[in-house]
Image 1 (cartoon, rainbow, N blue to C red):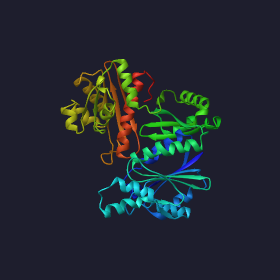
Image 2 (image 1 turned 135 degrees about the vertical axis):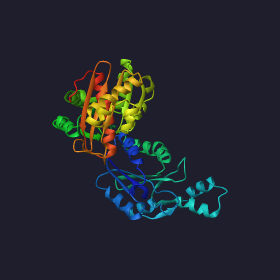
Image 3 (image 1 turned 60 degrees about the horizontal axis):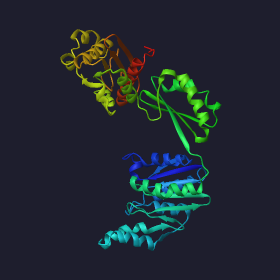
Image 4 (image 1 turned 90 degrees about the vertical axis):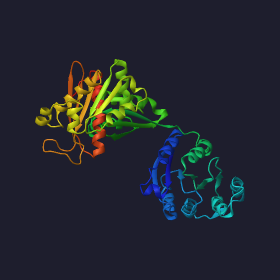
Length: 413
């Protein structure tokens, strides 16, 4: 069973606001066995809404429209749907009475505004809200069922859980829920992950393969119906076998959580020294509840003067090798470990851009170093992307390097 989702709002199409309603709707529909195959955000424009609804007819049996049901002049979702279906808007006295009862002392101007929401598309079943004032609608166009919901997240959630979900379950009760299964990897570029598993998808025809890339992290995402769980388990096992130590977790596991667990199990403490990441590594580590069990603190030695005065990096080291170099990273990691009396020190220094590049160190050059009582390990990265992407990738790479270090995995340098 396929679905389409239309989210309405000028704030979405202008980029002023992230569309948070679509992900929550897609997950809820998947849990019922309904797969979203089309999503479109449209402005508060009657013609645009009508066009978007018409475009769903060839691909989706279920349509969910959200937003634009309020009382203001730019709330024109009802009008757009009526236009698409060739129907009229009709005033519903029962809805008007319920809305009026909510505001018994309202003046006539305010009440007239609220009562705009008493208009419904002809032949619609009305869903009255528990929260807010905007009623939802259920409509039919041939064999297509259309649910029109408020855009306010709390109102959307309440109406979907209370009305739409049960209605879908009643109409299409024989559907098998869709599930997403995720293997999380670090240390391999997206193209390398794709190459390693490209021949597997045809072998598991009921399972859809996908990749989702983040800075320094690549997720392998498998989508299948719960009835195909045996195929999914076999596919996951084969993928994990091929990707080996690059796989650090599953589903929603974050690499900082995995590293924290390893540190706790090893009863090891950690300190960090950062330059180009500006404390991002420490922030990510401390996003994990309970990280004070193993993380002692971090030092941001951004300017060379701070590297010298706070971290004790040698002036000769900076003069001879530069702030972005392996020797500097090694001295920073050792200083963090020594100053905070930690078992392990991790350092990051690099050129995040857009300025600061040299012929030897172009933008994206980053050094990561790990130091403990017995050993030192350094890695040089050359990575593309924006300043934010480079910083995020450097932090995730440092975490992954630490993960491999703690599990005694072989590390390619």
